[in-house]
Length: 257
Ligand code: MN
Image 1: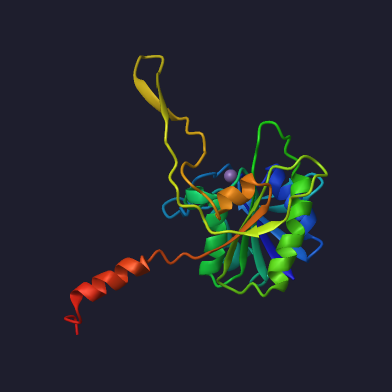
Image 2: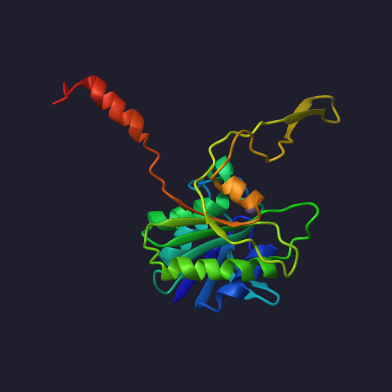
């Protein structure tokens, strides 16, 4: 099995090295990942500047290709040029920080997986919840993620499908309570910006949002993580509001045709 591995934290991030080491148990792994940190860049792609690329060796892990672009760029360039054949699976992660709730829509990690689905490939995004009181151990997180990834593959993950996997914050050696299938929480974040002044007295603003979602989140990816479970959410990229579409069609009353 040929696996394309990417992320949004950059090719030198600890999460991608740990996931590389774990995924080699499943097959041949090729890394094509952003040159620089691309967190919260969503599904952006690069159109007006060149995508510079270079070989990068990460100690105790891999020699891969860094692309100076967005996560989605990496998937496009990997599939169209860098890999010998279309990969059997695309994995994105392990992201430093959970990608649950509406953060899924800001996430470059998830965008890379969705890009793979656009290209007709099966894709899995993997993210790790960070907590100040739990030192992050990416090798342990990768070991926890591996059986879930394996189960998704064995369960018949198809081309064009995207699975969003989030791992709870776990001290080294501690196992999650289990795996929970969960829908994406749609509660909004409460944004905060700090207003400061530059050396010349001009104001600037710095996002200081604590990425906590507000409101009831029962049965969602957010509560699964909080309860100490691995959260698995199948995602779609069809943003159609089906209920509203039906209502509008009903209102049009068949006059359209
Ligand atoms: Mn990130």
